[in-house]
Length: 489
Image (tube, rainbow, N blue to C red; front, side):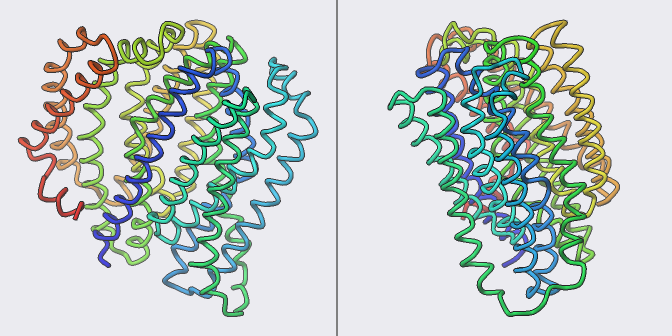
């Protein structure tokens, strides 16, 4: 299968997986925020989830991502080493899970008191199992991506997200409250992990078992390469979690609810870019290994153009409809999320471009440079949050996120530009066209926002924006219908 067809197949499968994920996550957010939980309860739940995200980071480190990198390399060089690579990653990961889960189980009440929220002690106790399930689920999907079978990782994602929705709703209907919601997340991720490792064993581990000894130093190299990846992942997790933790610690659960809801809506919009980034990234490593950097450069330029064409207009769209969307979907109790979402509309574009850029750096062997960029952004985000949250409240956390992620993206783009030798005139030309399309869409949609009175009219306004965007994108040639049709077929 050609590189283009393989990427198209992977991106299509991941897109279907992301559609399922978006539907499930959207339903979860709507049911939790709009039906089952008050704003304070919603904030308490995701305050605990943010803390547990740090636990998942410590348990996982960069083991699975490092193994995925070596799997992608040794698939071509020496496939008999693949079982050793997989075993090393799983061993390291299980040890990390056991340590973190034991600490949470033993000290959940003390940790809750230390964080100023004694009521989350039970959530952290259930969270010991959550950390194990989430860590192993992430490991299985990363290893599948290393085999460049993003279609199979999409299947695992679908299983996980459908299970999340089902079990969260069931446990809440049973009256189990916040611990039930946490248990629903845990069971959903556990099922996804079981499916993921079953696929890995049947499709990739068992066929390669040939009794050949591990290459000298292989386990050490997997562990060593996991260090910069762990720094990168740690910076990413801290960027995504520390702001929520600081909002909860410095403000209150309701503020956490506002910030979490704004962040979840923005990440909901970003989801398709994640599919494209995951599908394309392993190919950069393959092209780099075969010294085909020109092909990698053209691939990145095309990916950049399409992502920009989708997400610059999406940023303006989110800004325009943030107020009516929060009002009609979630009600008066969540009006505090409106300014948060308006600021995070910029985050939509920045994070979308980051999704198609940052993972590729790992496969290009630039994990250390990426780690430095991520860690710098993480430290900056922490400092800005400490300064801005007490000064301007929850909006300060959103502003800190946008500023630090924008600076990190700039560094990543410079690294990719130098590594691949990108065509700057091509990228600038595409940016100019997309700016014109975005302006046209904004002018057409802005007058319609005032007519939003309910969910049907909100959907109609969003649909009108999509239609205007599509017409302008096709007319200007930034989106080629023939190419899209070829991918879909």
